[in-house]
Image 1: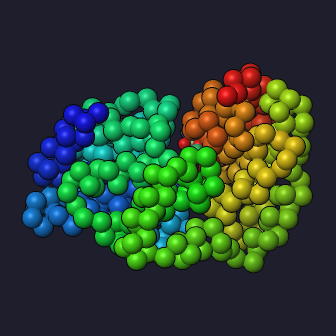
Image 2: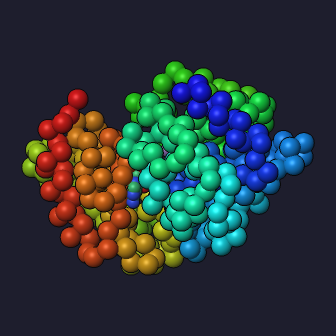
Length: 335
Ligand code: AMP
Ligand code: MN
Ligand code: MN
């Protein structure tokens, strides 16, 4: 592994142009890690004369509203402007090449493709892999990469990295929260970023219409005690109509899972979120006994043991039926 890090540094030190990409519909870990590295590379670009390009493969190209507070939006460009055949490309938080969306082909054509990730299921689609399934977030690896490049921590870099670790540890609540994570948080906070302000932007604000939406979608939640091999399942849907009533963006649906997963009677919580285009993005969470990552990989998606997802065309009921089957199989693999 040490040799891989050294090789990554050599590649990044000598490249005239570095192309960064994170997974589509980026979360705080994907976008935060990428922006942190973009800031770090830019900060030394003057001396190295390097060009830095950062993007993700969504059309329309929209930075999720809750992530717009991150410094560095001006470092991003839409995928249309991405080099067709990057000399050096780095991916963030993408477990497989299809998670790059419109940039999948660019990644496939890249001369050097450095994959920075923490998914155990990573398919190793690059030419160089900096992957640690034990890392709480890709942001931990991004921090290590920035240090290896010899760039000092700044407030702009820290914002992205902090967004990454708080997103993927559920604000230091999940069991992925290790002493190392808290040590990293301390290092980041010393640059002067304010954790309350980050939490406010990420989770603690919404328009008034959100309350009505929450009331409808929680009110129709279903508890299935016998599902997931008897470990219990709770699920609900957030449709376009639910959001339209309050004039709400897709992203407001992301927070519903955090309420649903509190349900004592269910090991597994699932929220099916309808995109503006009409596809269902399915989010699942486990309390530990059931491997939702395995179930979602079987359903064509991906993720981790405790948090995973997949995308489904067709109806919500069909997607749910498929997932129910995979959960029934995968539930006996508990640790
Ligand atoms: P989410 O429920 O959207 O917060 O996603 C939880 C985790 O599941 C993410 O960290 C991803 O690793 C994974 N994931 C979610 N959606 C997908 C998808 N459509 N394809 C592959 N992995 C996904
Ligand atoms: Mn992610
Ligand atoms: Mn992540």
